[in-house]
Every structure is written in C-alpha cells, then in structure tokens.
Image (cartoon, helix red, strand yellow):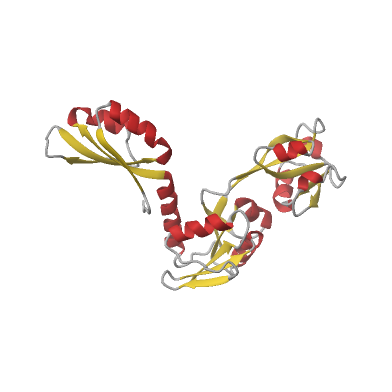
Length: 279
C-alpha cells in the first residue's frame, strides 16, 4: 500500500482532506484517528503534525505527503517536492522597526526571530549574510518589542499584524509558499495515480465546460474567443447553418467568454461544473 502523510491540524489540514476526498480516496471519519486504511485504492493515511511530515517522508518511513513548501525547506530533510497543490498560499518576508533596515545587508550580525530557522538561515547564507537566528514557535512579531530580536522573518499576508507591532517590511521575498505533494525521491507504486488524481481535482476546480450553439459563419470567431484547453469539440446540428460547440475554459473567465460569444451570435450557452478530470 502507498503510505501517505496528511496534516492532522492547522491551515492545511481541512483543505488537504477535502482534496483527497474529491480525488476518490476515503480518509478518516474521526478527527482523533492518526491512521486509516483505504484498501479499495491501495493506500494508507497517516495523520501527522504538518511540520513533521517532510521528516517522515524524507526518511522513507512514509512514501508521499502533503505539507507546505516552507515546512519542506525548513526541515532540511531529503524529501523532494513533486507538485504544487494550489492552496495554502503564503509569502515570507523580513520586517523590522520602521526605518531601521533597508536591505539584507542590515541584518549582518543582528538577531532575527523566526519560526523557520532552517529556511531563513539558508536564505541569508545564500546572500552572504550572517545573523543570529532566534527560534520561536509563533507570534514572532512581538520579538522586537520584547527585546528578544532586532528583526523578524515571518509569513506576511496584508502586513497589518506587523504594522500593529510597529514593524515594516523590507528586503526581498524569502519564499512564496503553498501546499505541495512531496516524496522520498524513490518511485512508489500508486504515487503516479495519486498525482494524476490530485491534478484532476485542480483542473476540476479551475475549469468549467462550456456548451453553445453558433452559426457556422461565426464559428471561427467563436473558437478564437474560447479556444479551449486543447481544441473545441464541434458537432453538426439538424440545421446545417448551425453547429454545437463544447469547450473547456478557465472558471474565472466564464462570464466574460459567455458575453463575447453571445455578442457573436452564439445561443443556448450553458456552463457545467467539472467534478473530475484526467488530462
């Protein structure tokens, strides 16, 4: 059986479980369960702390796992990223007291508080900067005010939390992170199937099917407006002057595309959700 590590709590947990369910796998029913088997699909799920998943996978104890790219890089394990999963986005930046820092050079020989010392340390070393890293498990924005550090490196969304603490962002982006599928670097039976299923879920979330009827004379303009993932399917209708078209388009574009097709003379324009896909 393919052994899969899944976050047991935190921001990645619920979305990861939902994605696996949409991919056809049967996960745990009780949130207290740490292990469950899905013999029909030939997999076992192990529910672990997100921060530990890369360590388990990198050691070979488990075959694949879902965790954050930030946690993978911070772990220093031998696990490798297989594919991004399209959720759990986060951005890591440096911040310090207003006006105190302008670039990375200012971090030389100062204290930097972070929950990700492996990730931040590697980034600073790669830029030739040596700092004293202060490891904290959370709320690093308070470190400067409390005198524990001179600057911080943390996840930033709007930056409002940092501003409330009297800090401002400076320097380059440390990392753009998201949830990723990781592996041990060794081929495992069932891993390719898992990847195809997860990618099918991403396609189903990002695309819709669009059906419409259009006069033959406007077909070229219509297919130019909605070229599809590969190529539209065009079928004849009883009226030889009309054809039916089916195409897959990005979900975010559907209303604009429908408006453009209607203006070209298309009618009976219908949008359908995609529940699963293999491309």
